[in-house]
Length: 118
Image (cartoon, rainbow, N blue to C red; front, side, top):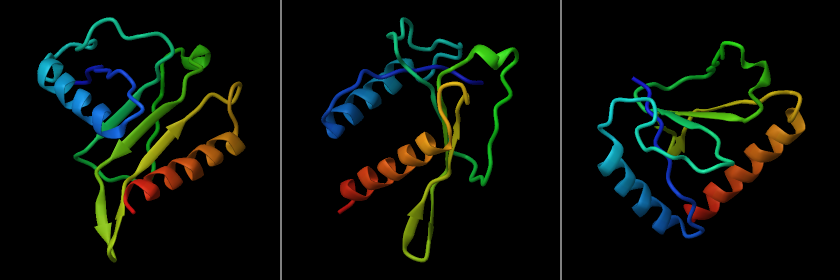
């Protein structure tokens, strides 16, 4: 079952995680599509498939030609040779984003994550 739970943005990562955990306790067991109601405008989906590690992932949206938001999917992380890896799939509509933008996002995301773990 897939459920949509959103968490308000906080610039402070620790505060965001605290709020996310609160949302999960409050809405995580709701087995409906919109487990936490009233998502704010200008959001985008980030899915977690924590039980699987993958090298490729693709969503086929029925009549999805007009769906312009990016879709991010993370898989189960794993450790290899002393480094941690987490699969990430990004699906974008080429009308609003191309390989340059996607690559730039991935590089900047990697820099942010590396700074968090230093």
